[in-house]
Length: 82
Image (cartoon, rainbow, N blue to C red; front, top):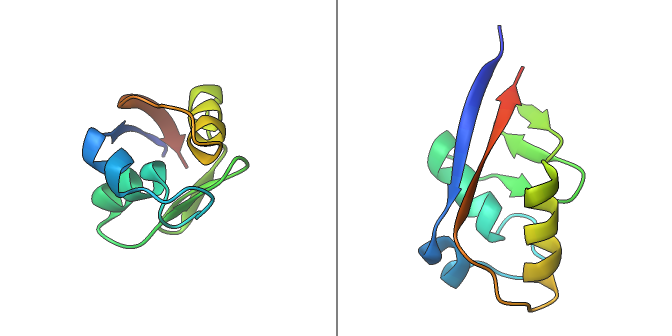
């Protein structure tokens, strides 16, 4: 049975995030709060413990902008986990 998870990327996640570091980007930090363990995120996959899902377009755009040094804002998105 699948479940929908809301990922909220906060201003603190953005401030602590490291560009081009899949385990320390703001989205990975936000996922880590949900899973209570280390996580990672890249343009092809988001890791929620043992579950991996394709990131939605908004998350991929955010990662691209953050990695390029563009200004980004807090945002949220939902993913369906298997």
